[in-house]
Image 1: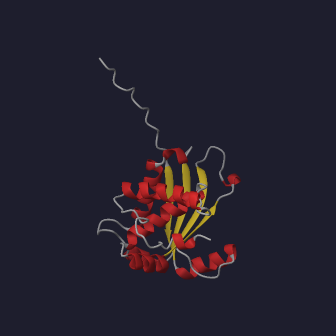
Image 2: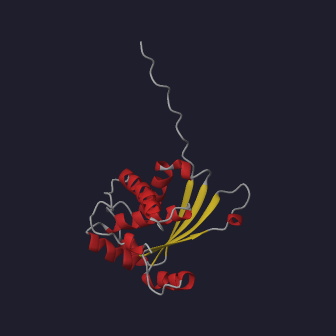
Image 3: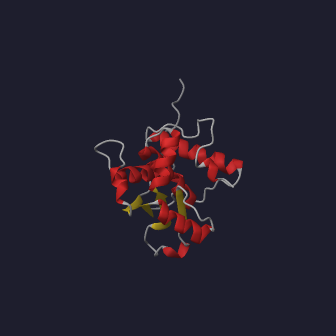
Length: 187
């Protein structure tokens, strides 16, 4: 008689508190159904990353996600990256000292630009809400140390994004043969 394989010990899913702030009220009109507002959808994307890739979160964590507009993100992009134009998402990692001892680890801030997200979603023929969720995941991965400076790093990051998006029922954004807007952000 063969023995059943030993039971795998499940990896506990750490807590991730995603504080979503809406700076541009036009975000409130972007949803995937009449029951899901954009704040819920962005939080769901962050929670899906935490649930799908729990080993990336060694402890309880916090992140702030600002849903702004092109003007806000262009100003930030110019100030911090010397690129004086809007982009779809920016991530600002917190300094390790930003977390009080005994508190959840503060990862940093993510800013997503509404007009750019809408334009890119239209160009890709995908729902704006799905693209916003993808960018929330993309920005959060940057806060966790992922990058796309090399092809290998990009493939690793895209594989995680694809798994997390699939858990949300969102198609692989990298399956297209044409470069996606996120691909165009690579140097």
